[in-house]
Each structure stands twice: as structure tokens, then as C-alpha cells.
Image 1 (cartoon, helix red, strand yellow):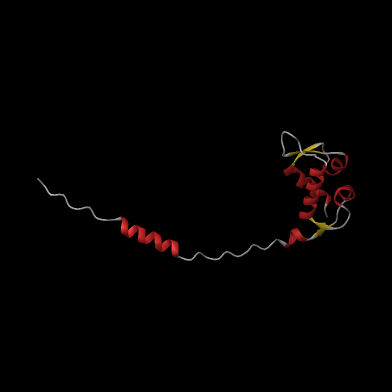
Image 2 (cartoon, rainbow, N blue to C red; image 1 turned 60 degrees about the horizontal axis):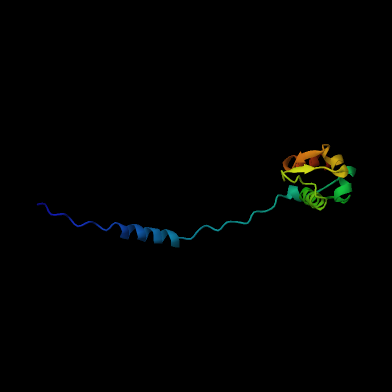
Length: 113
């Protein structure tokens, strides 16, 4: 009969390595700066001014005000929430009776200069 050798303990070295990894400091991430192009005030067309006002505001604020108008007037489709059913004012801006929320920003950009 052959004698069996005792098994080596491998777990000790691995757990020490894992502990060393956890204590290592992670690099500090810098806070992202907003793109100044998005903060530039834009001239608003007359048809869009009926919804968001005639004051020059940045593109991001125009989209926020559009969403406030859409939610206030319940223009989102009941079944497919990504679709927007345009009323008379919004149809003048979008040019269609029904558009997707992704297409909306593209169509609104034509009314900003």
C-alpha cells in the first residue's frame, strides 16, 4: 500500500491576494463638465414659441418645456408611451400628427437657430 501525501493548502495564498486587491486605492474619477454647446441660448421660431415661450433658451430647456407641455396636455399615447399624439400647437412644430419621442428632438431642432 502506498502512502498518500497530505494535500497542500492553496487557499491561504489566494485569499491574501484578494485582500490586497480590495485594499488597493481606486483612481478618483473627475466630474464630467457639461458641453457648452448645449448651454448656448437659441432663437426660437414662432410656432415653437407658442409652446415654450419666445425667450431665447438653451436646447436642453426647450426639450424639458416640451415634455412639460406633453405631460400637461396628456399627449403621450396610452398604449405605446414612446409615441406622441400632437395637438394643433404641437403639429405646427412637428409637422405630423404622431411622432416618436426620439424623432421629436430631431424635428424640433429645425425650429432652433
